[in-house]
Amino acid sequence: MNVGTLDRKTAVKLAVGVAAILILRFVVMADRTPAVVGVTDSVPAAEKRLASLRQTAATVPGKEILLKQELAELQTRENGMLKAETGAQAQSQLSDVLHTTGAANGIDIRGMEDWRVKALGSEYGEVSVTVRFACKIEQLVNFLSALANVPQLLSTNQIAIQGTTDPKNKTIQVRLSLSGVVSKKLVPKTGSTL
Image (cartoon, rainbow, N blue to C red):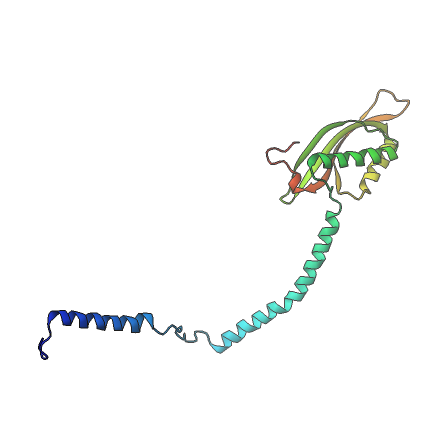
């Protein structure tokens, strides 16, 4: 090899070496700090944004108090729901309320005609029971008034009243459908009846 001439092997080694140095310098050991971006907003715009954020932050304690009040009211209302593990247990509780309230008003409620559990909105379910019984009109009025005062969330869906053929006793035939609010988990997935 001559000192003044460059052969092909040496030229390739030199080019590979320079390429390796450049790769190391600009890729492997490159400066990884993010570039500084210039300010795009003016100071008045930033101050307006800050004032808006402060106003929003100032309303948070009031909203938290309101949320606590609403949650307490929801808890109070949900205390009236029928608490049961299954739809049949909820229907049994509703039946017990009917029997107890009826017995307290001198009404003998024996059988149930129709039992249903269905969705009531997106968060709750509704269990309903239909019964028939005979009573005097005063007993019915007192019975319905007593049902309105029970702690459970109950509603009369349907009531049908018919007179009897015995005008001496002044009794009437009543068909009453009563519903109570339950948890959504008790609603059957496949159908609306139990």
